[in-house]
Length: 246
Image (tube, rainbow, N blue to C red; front, top):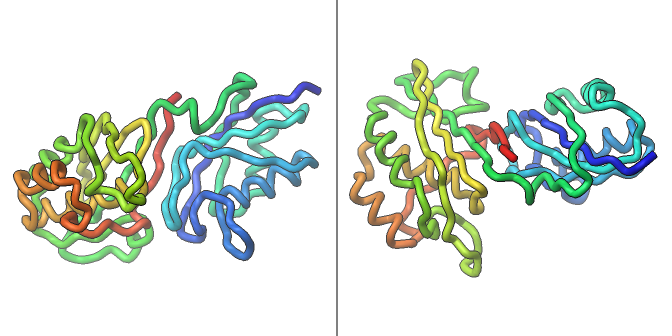
């Protein structure tokens, strides 16, 4: 059987994981759980590559994952077998066979993350695992205007916790908000993101919405490249990788 290349789409609740990337025992990671399940199903050691390395506590609704195998199983059979083997907090949504040279990370053209805010006078216990509660008042129009300042190519040094040696000039293709009742979703799309970038941008947008940071101050912060002047980053629990485009 020739060696085949597969691309999976996974969803997971990141609450019980120490992130995507495989870590030594006893750390529980998404990559480790997926590799264990595939190895049992296929009877061979399998290593998978994710399009993005989500941090501890971050969720996914459309993580793309690639792996190679000589299995005769069809994609539909792989999905069914994975759903039977994976733990309850991971699900395989889809599978397709791709070109042998296809790489889940390097071929990705765009990734979209969503951060969910629960904007209300009282917290909702049912939403606490997947959203950040923000008290009213909250200026949604100011947040939408502030998000647009992130679009385009900038030096995002002030919005990352990456080492100082890291190149921090990057491009954001889209930064927008979608409101639905008490929930405000912040969407960010880009070819890639710096370490903690989305969560720091969210913390900054929350400060704008609460009137603690003006649009002018945000523009100056973006130009300054000074991380110490930016607000604290938002928690991981409200963040989800919603999709990857190739």
